[in-house]
Image (cartoon, rainbow, N blue to C red; front, side):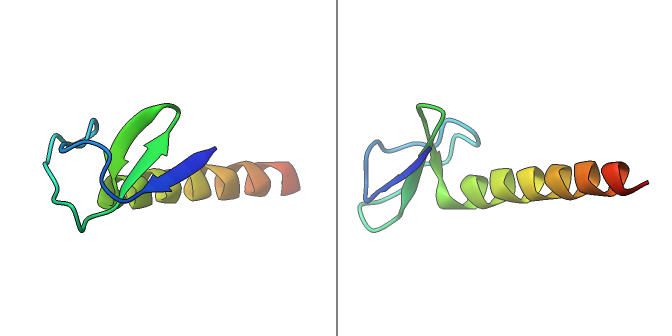
Amino acid sequence: MITVTPHPRDWCAECGQSWGRDDIAVTVAGVMICDKCAARVADVARTERERRRSERRE
């Protein structure tokens, strides 16, 4: 489950960057990460899902 919160902490657990009150943080598996890292995680998950689908088709 992914939860979006306005400003939970002041640093990203993934990249270590800090953010301000206006930035968005995302909770993934109980860890707060910035929106840029969340987009990267979603991209990796999407790529992995597509790879598995193509393997099933073959």
